[in-house]
Length: 90
Image (cartoon, rainbow, N blue to C red; front, top):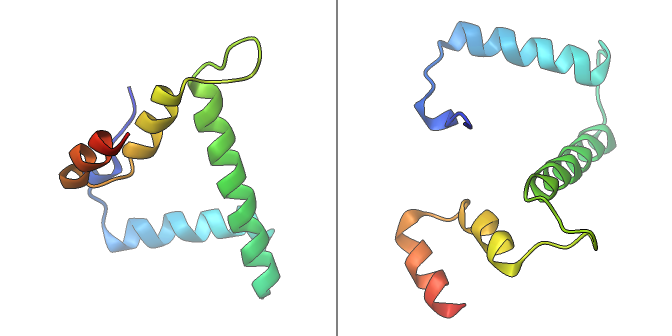
């Protein structure tokens, strides 16, 4: 069962502590970061998330998933009001 981040409540102090800890891990206690550092991190995270999501859909022996599984994954990021609209277009 996946947690829904929208249902989590956290104080500003706890959020700041968490973010600071994440930054220390991601940037290895660097005092400054460049645009490229941030961009590379963002791209790495994006790729890792797509990999994680794809392989959770259990690709077949050819390394493929059904279009239905893919669309379900994409639609999970769409507002509920637009899901029906996009489903009709498919």
